[in-house]
Amino acid sequence: MKLIVNADDFGKTHESNLGVLKAFQKGYCSQTSIIVNTNYFDEAVQFAKENNLLDKVGLHINLFEGTPLSGKIKKLKHYSRYDMFDYRPNFFRKYFAKDILAIREELEAQIQKYMSAGFTLMNIDSHHCAFYDMSVLQALIPLLKKYEFQSMRFIGNSYFNGSFFRDVYGKRWMKKIDTLHLKHPDYSSSVATFQKNMKIKNKDLLNADIAEIYIHPVLIGDYLIDDYTGGNHIAETFKEAGLDTKKLLKINDIC
Image 1 (cartoon, rainbow, N blue to C red):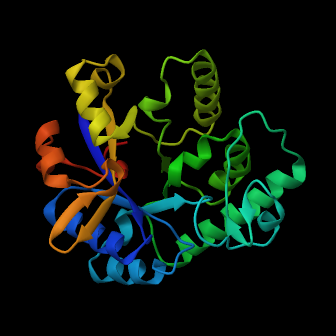
Image 2: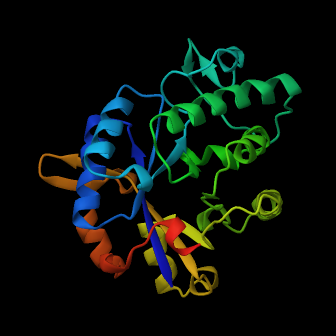
């Protein structure tokens, strides 16, 4: 199996920026994805340039935290409140054309800010899985074509939890993505889910030629933790999962 480890949340906080750099230095990740609408984005860009990482940084689209970069989405009450993101996904909500246009305006602003910083990986994923929402995906698809993105994170293995609704919805999502012919891993999950699926011999994981694991590195003092797992040390979680950090590749190397 070929393996990608992506460090999510680059640019989110100062501690996240330090954590991503440390994860690269320790060999715990092969690429990262950046949130652009934060106070720590410029610092992340500076770190990336100083450490020759511009070709290893993808876009982590964000509709959940911070201030939107555009205006129309601030008027959608289920996306923002008091000019801050307050996104509450609802798979049964009816979206009108003006809603899709407002979401697209925000996504395009984030894409343009990502590209203007000089990043070249052209891989896209989303904070808290925002683009699993069909309305977000509908807004995003024309932009993926327009800006010539090369790859993206596929729907996570943990999304399929046995629910009939999730199974139907997830397959519909994958069908839409496949029409774009973008590169993507066959499997994606957190380290903890990867470890669990290895133990139970999950067929999706065992049959995958390419698997992506995502981590959320944060450096607190001298401790490099995975914020997603509630603060477990990344070195410990990698050891428990049996991951060989010498064999990691970024998505454009193997797809």
